[in-house]
Length: 245
Image 1 (cartoon, rainbow, N blue to C red):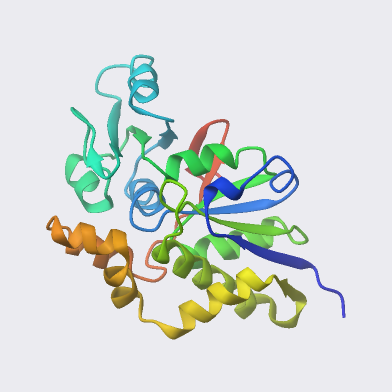
Image 2: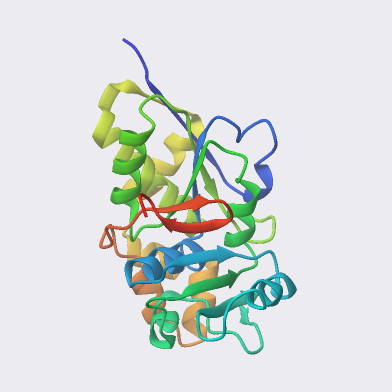
């Protein structure tokens, strides 16, 4: 039997290095912040999402854009940056993104996207758009090794990202069956996904509980939806755009 896909999961963005990413297809997950927001923004008409390393980099990027053509959004340590739009999906939609670039800085997700930029292809994946990302990547990269990168939280493991990784692994196996070679980490993530309801799992996570305490339970429940968005965000020259766009 020929195995034409290898799939591995990294539990934290800090585990990416110069050896792991090149030549591979990377799915980056930040389920309760960045990648769910990026997928939602692009699905609702944003022209691009530009990941920024921090507040100052985001403001510098904004200075290169015409007034009214962009939205600054982001957080640091889960606090919305001063003068920025809130970084969660529904709050950002309320701000308005259609026809605009979103310049976006988060503590973990946008950093993870930038750290993976040396890969052959980098996609922003979430529960919301998992099936669209997997189907596109398997068609576009028929023999590539897939590296699923959980953003985590400042060097720590996050339950919701690992659960999201398990969903992506389950979708890959559903599509390829026995032709996929899973690492132990990929198998563990898939086991977690199979064992738990998405809404309950995200609510039980540390970040999910923090968001609920701040009145953001609706954002958690939104991010827990499985494959409701048919959008494939791909990193292209420092911008995240819809694949094929």
